[in-house]
Amino acid sequence: MNRHFSAVDVDPAIMGVGPTIAIPAAVKAAGLELDNIDVFEIIETSIVVYRYVNCALYLLHLTCGPSHPNTAAMYINFAMMEEGMGNVHIALRYLHKALKCNQKLLGLDHIQTVASYHAIAIALSLMEAYPLSVQHEQTTFKILRAKLGLDDLRTQDAAALGLNTLSPRLLNRKPDASIATKGHLR
Image (cartoon, rainbow, N blue to C red; front, side):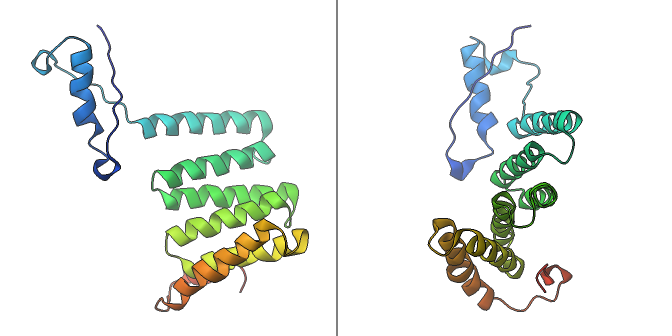
């Protein structure tokens, strides 16, 4: 049995239709016609990547343990991958794991811990959970101001994100009665 594959570029506006374009291209590359094919094997890249990342995370836990800086970095990388695929709620779970790991290993005011707070603030803003997002960004700003001062660009970015981007969205929203708005700073 011969295997052939094809990779094609698809306009982001019509993402999800890749196989309808890639399959005829792969069949043509094999010198066949669509009528000659009984079964197509379609591998979803995100599923394959997810399996490899889970395997890597498992091996990292075995070799380094669940409380290791590399484990926290892996959580953040996995979260960014999930966020890129639109699974922000899953990304948030991994960002929280990275935050807890960084807090335990590096302390509450370490720069890596601050980066975790900032990443969580961005993920929460993507989910339109602006009150929690502002709280996490305020935590980011407070730690950066104490550690690096107001002249540091990271401190200025945290202030700009919290004050100029998230706060106006918070003011324009209706009050949220859900328990999720009861953040860690209250």
